[in-house]
Length: 605
Image 1: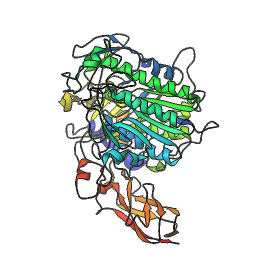
Image 2 (image 1 turned 45 degrees about the horizontal axis):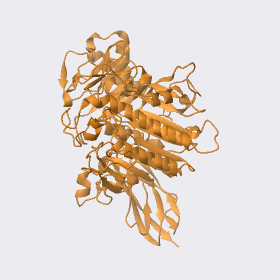
Image 3 (image 1 turned 30 degrees about the vertical axis):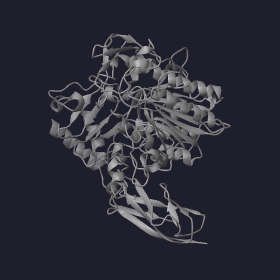
Image 4 (image 1 turned 90 degrees about the horizontal axis):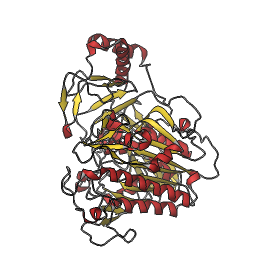
């Protein structure tokens, strides 16, 4: 049966050009669907390590600890719930199972096969939503967890965040991971602020220095300082990731005031999972402070707020559903409980809300890559790299202009914390009902699941155990599929073939002229061949930036007379990385002996 199914699948691919289930190929954001006297502000909030059931609007308000720390622990998220009640709640939103893979896709709108090369190494040549909003004239601010980079030889890690379009930032996990909660390690606008070991108290609270409070105040300051101009606030929260510690609201107060500053993790000294429910509620409280600040500054009616999770809840916890069953946390797993996250959009008088106390729900699939094009559409700004963006905007669905679902499936390429090149790759595609994994080292025959019967992917005749003790099951026997399952298998197989990795073979710079006067600019374009190659990104470089520099968008800025060579390198083999090895080495952060192109530009008076 398996050979017959594969044969049918390949025949379809070869004869029909993969005309199966497809999502929209529309890349550029739609025109603004409403008229407003001012540009829309955008606040994007990313919660760290929380499934959709970690927000009580999704129907569960109790937590379970598999360590025995608590059971049926009631918690509340009233501020997020209110945003959902007055906005739109997305039922099927999916991130990656660990945070960095998610953050790269979120910021760039791209699948990981295009620009994820290794942890903590995102290169500044990668165009992100921070770049897009800044280029459109917005003030941009990032406050919370960074993690993606460690800088390059030319730009140290503490300053490197600004290379992604951020005007203002206060961030954790920039030069090092360090401490995130009590007496944290932060970087604020290029200044390293190390609170480790401090015995004084925060004058704003009269309590110990607490990382989430510090970055939250920076976010509120950013709103206040930019209330008279359009802004994009990205708030990747430090909560509710481990280590698990009491919050300033934990009672009695002495628990927070005397808790060990340094954590050994794994529910030991300085890391106590008993406080996970408190962390969720404090996270919600901080979101409420952002909403209140927008109201106080008169900006609430002109601001889109998006709240989303970055991956599933840790597997040491479970969410107790109304019927008493426990939905286990699945961080690190590519099953639903590792990928499915909360997603709420709220924009007063723009995004319709539910009636009679009911939540308005969007039931289409939303991929993490869809956020960038959606907020760009909401703000009416251009995405400079629209052709490279895999995400599909669902803004028209959010504002109620259409009931048509914006995508039919989600494709994933996942290497976790590995680095390219690696043969430890998971490729898979899924819709609401079925999921197909491509063959890999552990399962050379691939894996197929019926999600309507097995949403957590626990069926199969065998399993293998991976990092963190996570099990991967073999799935359904392909020789025992129902007719409907066989049809789904064929459709998903075609999509996996369609998304096979294709290398870049050639670059060609496109320029209207090669001569420009001093103090003028010239927009260059580049054709990346073949068109279906995944890594369409490029790195621009000038041989003499004092004569003419070139930015990440391919715009030449002429400074003084002379000649200069402008070169472009392909991400596919240049492998640009802002990692520790890059800035410690004497070489640049990317290879320059692969696919490239160049032209000579003359700057005149």
